Image (cartoon, rainbow, N blue to C red; front, side, top):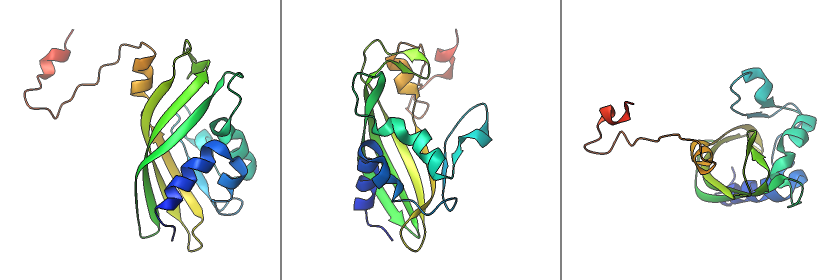
Amino acid sequence: MPNIDFAKTWAETRTNDLAAHRALYAGEEEFAIEGRMVDDHLGDTVSTTEEFNKELAHYSNKDAGNGLGVQTITVTEAFEGNGHVMIHWDWKVEGADTFRGLPTEGKTLTSKGSTFLQVNAEGKIILESTILNETPVFQQLGLPLITPHYWEEGFDPASLAA
């Protein structure tokens, strides 16, 4: 079972060394990385090395001038137990021309994300489920998204009415 440093290695290799990152995962078609696509839930699962390299390459981009952006993932918390690791992290991308098709106008974008990992007896990742909170990113790009804090005392749902 990996220790908490495994979470930091996961983040560091994700954004710096795709081959080292792939080495953290189980063998071909013995792992799955699940994303969160809206239109096609079947098209967002990675389970081969070819898919891995194609779908995750942008995370380790270091060419600040190619428009893909240079990403940083910084682990803020990690929990482990019973063959599972939960990682909370801060995310930043600098130099991306667009985010989900929206122009960034040179902005450095930041948010938070979480990754759930299941590992096998050898400590290799067999399942990953990652989610990035995109709402703050869209807000940074100027989209008028509201994020009401329903849990705060005195919150009035009527305040959301147009």
